[in-house]
Length: 426
Image 1 (tube, one colour):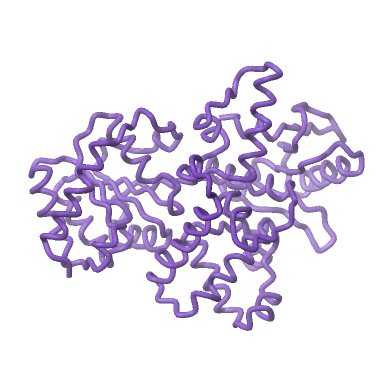
Image 2: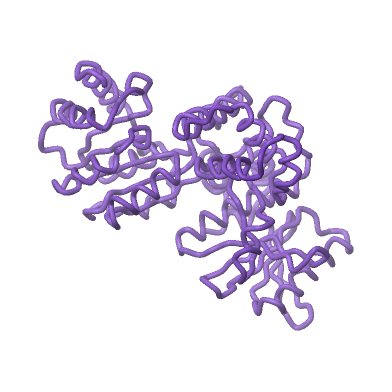
């Protein structure tokens, strides 16, 4: 239980902070267009911690001149808050903002057990609700079960490369030698430092990333799932970060971590639910093959570099592949498309990404940092052509750190796209 006096004090301080926000100075994000402001549905924004969920909601509400109340539940003074305290929270909101406030923004709501019952009750009173959270299962699962379609879910990732350029005032349009050089510099910085909004102005990026990872492990996983062996969870997390873009070898992890296969998979599921790790399944019409040999990616490239004992291989190709995958997740979520990778067999030619609309393959995408060498170029293009025949798809894209152009091979067109051009193509 938390006293009304404490809740009122916390909310009053948060209201004061809210008055200092200036939404017009924030980077515009594509997800702003996904909000349904006039809808009776709860607007739910989920994503990794510190990806900008709160800022996005504030920007949308303030940008439309909407009067709203704000409650940030990710406050240490509200850590002990229970379901029965939420009515006291509502009373404090009315005291501070007035009983006629039309919108209520509940930040990091997943910290309170049974939050969905409270939100459901508010929706029945025709109060417009904005909700953010940092755990996919807790939010999506409870939303689907208890709000039964009365919500609009919006997924948010850290800055895309386009948003990164906007933040750093990099010209993404001009074709001068200087502007092109600036974009290349920004691209190298992006695949090394990543796109967490707060980290852009931080010098001690290592301290920031280590603190972020620890907050995810402690607050979004350990506290919610009552994990006792958080040290082992931490080791598995760093193992996956160091081996991003690779297939997860559960047999090897079982031996290394001396844990059961079932427990390791459970821990990986928690990391995925907290959005730290994103997994990619193999393309197959057989369910067992889709879930076997899954790959692990990280939600942002900055997580890989800025950590203690970060001994990940300096493979720029893998970093580029990770960036392309996260961007694909962004784009495909808008159109409800699925992404897989293709590997026909142990010795088959692998294609990095297969974009599907249900069972229909829409595009095959191969990622390679350097295709200047004839052998590398042949390897990447032949994989696309082979998969094109097997999957019945003629939309073939090769993304590389090279000039954009189209080429004809074996009667098919392969679109070669500069990684920078592709990432900036909105």
